[in-house]
Image (cartoon, rainbow, N blue to C red):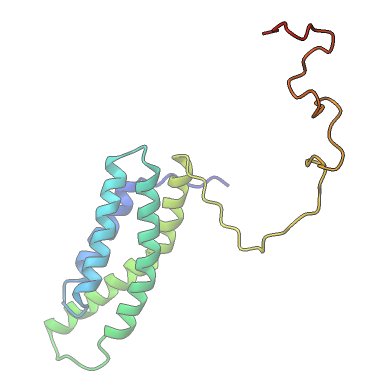
Length: 169
């Protein structure tokens, strides 16, 4: 099954729109807006420099970090009580819904941005296994028994029959 190609511009635009709508009711702190919009600015940098591996990697890492910070912001600052009836509560619900939708779309966006990172030539393999040490010593040369091709008595491989005063270059 082939992964669909999602444009980086579409990812940045969708997350920008959802972040703007999430900040509409001002129930989230300014750190939510600063975090999301600064990561989206790095996304604009990744759009502008199409061959930059660093820009896409920084955008991917920023998106991963904002997943964690969005969970914390929404968990701490979500209003649990009644704020009143009418239009204010509707705007708050819409704003909260858009912030939550932004959070829910970020893992899929991270997956697509990682695919773009790999397409641009990035090779960031994640290995959660423990490093293993092998005892295969076939590639090493023993210092106890030097190789026969280069003898320490004749380090420059000069001919033994040459005249003592003659130089062979």
